[in-house]
Image 1 (tube, rainbow, N blue to C red):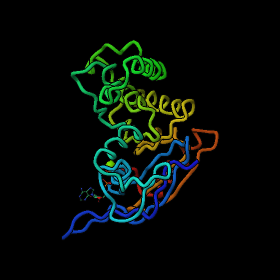
Image 2: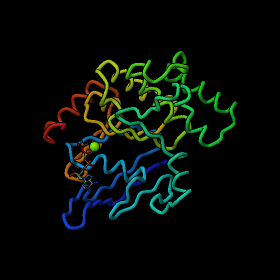
Image 3: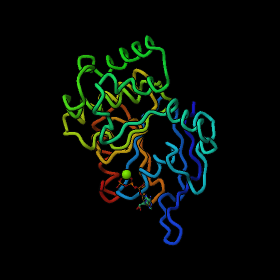
Length: 248
Ligand SMILES: Nc1ncnc2c1ncn2[C@@H]1O[C@H](COP(=O)(O)OP(=O)(O)OP(=O)(O)O)[C@@H](O)[C@H]1O
Ligand SMILES: [Mg+2]
């Protein structure tokens, strides 16, 4: 089943001085996919994420999630859509330092007044999957970068979103923590069937996806699928990036 559909998406910034961030992008994401978005700096990756997350509006084109036109949403419906349908993971974790790890994870449920027993049940489930059960009472400054990102992933998953959007989730991590975070994202995608779209510059992180869309100058440049071998996929990603003209 198709989860996300993007058709002829265009984004132009500015009025006097015009900058075309996205020229004409069309693609779709199926239920259960783990899609990576790669491309040089300035190619339009963050713009694309911002349009899907409804932070910004496109100049032209359409975006539907589960068949619903998300560009028509306004006010409370828009806020509800972001909270219920989407999960966000950021490069810098975006955790609240005044809260514990556990409180950070259940924050979206607290905001929605979800029943306390239900909050506990879901917290137990995600903290088990993400191996952070022992950390729930700690503060954000008492955990490692990888643990902080796993916490952020827990928060993104707690509402059972339709789509998880991640922008450079390994960008602030050392290579061991990056690998650890990617193994967890892969596991969540495979075992919990969480549909995920991730922007990354890192070919190793990208090799955990099952498909990569490469963007160049605001257009789709290429698309590759993983077979059953991650190491071979990694090599294919490196090859496309070298044709594209570097990762940054
Ligand atoms: N708010 C804005 N106003 C004007 N131009 C913008 C704005 N945001 C982005 N742009 C321009 O749109 C283009 C795409 O930017 P975008 O941030 O989407 O690139 P990116 O692929 O995410 O790059 P990076 O890999 O560096 O994060 C760039 O030319 C950028 O300068
Ligand atoms: Mg960006």
